[in-house]
Image (cartoon, rainbow, N blue to C red; front, side, top):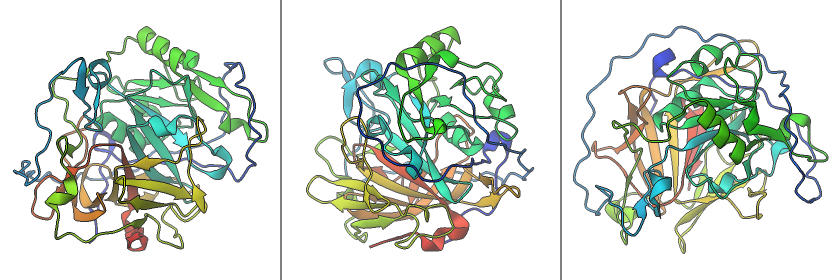
Length: 402
């Protein structure tokens, strides 16, 4: 099934991409260095996005009653409350605080990333050069010293972050595709001092020595500096009163897959197919493997487990989503644009089941995409982390699972 064939512009969400470098060697582990903060230097050049007519909104089906009990109203119990992003019980201050969205490179010269396993949601989308970039949505960041490496923005990532009411963190050129958007009052961001950023927060960023790595893969977001920057910029950490949670989660001691007994099963998930393709996932052939014993999907890339530099643990999530979006090549530099508003095909993988349906996002920038099954009911997710793969619809035929 083809996804929506029109991109939605500006306030409704077109997007852009950035060029990334080739391969580098993994360094020998070394003692944690004293970070030295310095001004960012990047060489990416981007252009202005094309005007695209907005598709008329359609009425959304309200969430219908489900056979499996789900989390409805959240209450604080012994100082804890269930997260809007994972459904899991966490400190109330974490659950009620807006998250941060951090841009993280995903090509070989950046590996391994630091702190990425602490993200509640990882959003992955193609960029120029037919590779992908990640955006981690973090609510549990108090125990981290830093996250990274950090790279530059693309406008479709900004629009996705706005749907989570996240404070957007990036390091890299913002001209010309992203400049107008990221400098709006409605986009609260913490950005390094580079071209196109009108109100930088340089105190949040610094470099870490990584012998064997190119300079663009040594820049990190430091949590203490980020908090100082947010305070200086006057950002409010509370969710808006109109905040819309992105997912419906199964209640405690319930499993989402029990609601989908007739749905097919899958243990291997390939966003770019088993042999890769031109839709952005072919460079490193990532895939997920489901483990029925713990209900988690483990991430592999480049033929091996994708890990977090903090402790070497493999990235694993409770839910994987294929969100099909119409994409376009913007210019001769291969910068891309994706429609992240409107609607399109979606496949949700949870508890070993495959639930086909649609995603819809018609209620503005401050609301996330919601996921519905073929009957129009909102899909139930298992509690835990979620990885969302933006599938370039025109290459969607290559995405597969078995």
